Amino acid sequence: MRVLSDKKLKEVKIFKTSIFKDIRGQIWTKWDKKTLMDKSINLSKLTISKKNVLRGFHGDSKSWKLVSCIKGQVLNVIVDYRKYSKNYLKYSSFILNDKNRNSLLIPPMFLNSWLCLSKDCIYSYDYSFKGNYNDVKNQISVKWNDKRINYNWPTKKPILSFRDK
Image 1 (cartoon, rainbow, N blue to C red):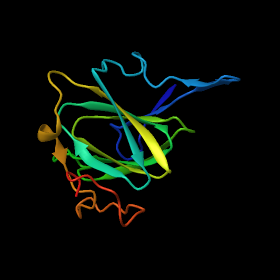
Image 2: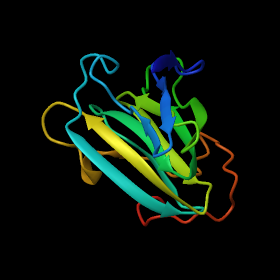
Image 3: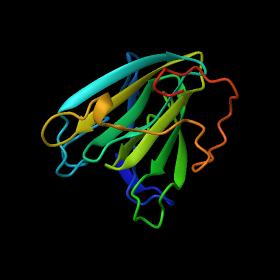
């Protein structure tokens, strides 16, 4: 596994996995302790979505998130939401899919959002944080089409949750 820093948002790490293939299928490593340094995973979630489901922009002040697309393909967008950062409200975008098997490590105060591009997709979140989990009421939520971010999503009619409208 190789770990790279994003060119725009240096704090965001890209995990390029190595995939072992044989007649049975494939195996790949999404996380290992030495790669995540001092981070330990204490919550893991999966979402199953259909094409044009758009989730996010969400984040919080203490959680590190390791995200991956296990099945299908997503357009993942990460925004720096640190008010005193020179990169405040700047973003980077990534294609995550079941072919490239890349994962992203997203620091606290960075917002995460993604759009399902394939017929369906399975997206994985692994969280590292101290204390209790910051659930919905303690998270930062910014509209998917917020003018300050001004991200040009490749859909005009995304499928959104009540929270994301």
